[in-house]
Length: 414
Image (cartoon, rainbow, N blue to C red; front, side, top):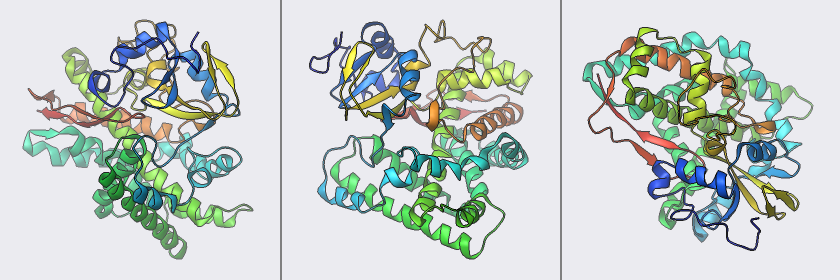
């Protein structure tokens, strides 16, 4: 039994998702944890780590016991000046869907969900395909590219920009703010880097607040205009800070995870020419292929919760107020649920049972859009760039994060 007072069985080199071999390939340490210590305390994260599929599902389905917890800076050392700036921003628990609990979470999500119904997402296909084709048009003449920079991040970002009715000229600015936001929240930035990132968060909030005001003055046929009008007409309207935070969340979550997934998925496909050539021969990935890609290369490694009361889980006693890292990546590689988990196998009978989009009340509201983007991206790439291959040195890089498998470079040729 693992107790809150004793150290868990020691993992090779400790448990440190920020660096070393675990940053590049966390699966060996997850496999050991699932077998020997499925729930253990990590000094590096100052949190309990949950690794088995059954335990992960149990936590995600029990928001009363395990409430959502997200802060603007979870792991970096204290930096008083940056911390003061962050404290001056609107509280996440009142404005952010991922960081809130009912009834606030219910209210925030109520204004998001109607925009991502299957019927509405399906209507986006022509625009999404046109964006994918336009990016490939720009890539083709060079014969080589950093796939992440040239396609993977621009593609879902342009989609969400179009949904929100935003000018493409703001792309780089928003991308920079989003990167700073995630690096500050889930990384280990030095004090001066924290200060730069904290200032950027104020710029990001002002930008989103101004967008909301602009849509109220001059509404259009876009998601943000509909959201503002829907809220203003409601009995319990969103506050200005809540509306601005909805925009921030859509802009960040609406492109970061999809960009990482596409980069990871393409690297896997190109590392096995048989898989890539099969896709080129029939450039229409099946639903099962997409679901298996999400299982094996899902970009969200971990979700964060906080125990609301003392609870026993996996032989461990987790005390009220302690943080919990719910490791989706490990749950999706649990051989008890997915036999031979390292093998890409779309024929699995439970292929859609993965947790790439979470589970429970915080399940990703944009999952349908992400699936649509993934399918169209692979169709367009296989059709337009059939000779696509990894460069001799693919430059693949993972950015340290306790929450995302943040793939941010992949050199390819054709």
